[in-house]
Image (cartoon, rainbow, N blue to C red; front, side, top):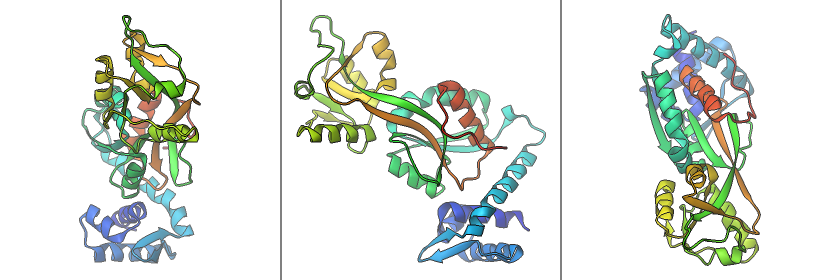
Length: 304
């Protein structure tokens, strides 16, 4: 049984597409087809069902995933022998929603670089849906999203934290803002909001719609750091994950406004696809996330 055939099998399983797998591997599509047929002949089972342009794992294919991933893990560890974990090499591609990229990733990436200086890291940003498609296409390894809890057997949660979304504005001693006010009064103030598509903005809009209300923001921008800087200059109110303004709230630069609207909570979730070959780079980043953020885990890290 050839190693390259197993690697090709995992690529096809991850992309669900022979031509995309061939492109990522640098093979022709016919070569990928031949390798899969060779593997199926050796195993005496059908690994994929071909429906239209997409391919799907058969029941036996699903079972073989675990064995294939184990072969890849052992091979990678053998390649790194006798180097230690601090000399780990390779690549790691992580996707994150904008607020995570801005507020959470900097500390995580600094610590990861200190631990694995030879690993090349790439960060991709997008909405939860966009990031999930990138994972399914095997374009990224892990995603860190802020959304409702992601359900489904195809996703493995490495870590999850509960995050509160809050209304915030400048803490101005000369013109203090009430710490509590009715939502119908608050939404009359100038609002700075993240772009449509952010999960927590969507939740806010749904709650307001139930009351026949809506916000007409004076500014929409996909960068929470810019919003925070404008808030500190006194430009209106915003609705942001509390972790993004934790420092400003602690220093009384910004202040939280409570309303009679139902509290919005989202979940910070570090996810990967169940068919993904878990590399040592991924495993190290997931363990580091646990150490830095101390989240409550819904799913344990995969066994070595």
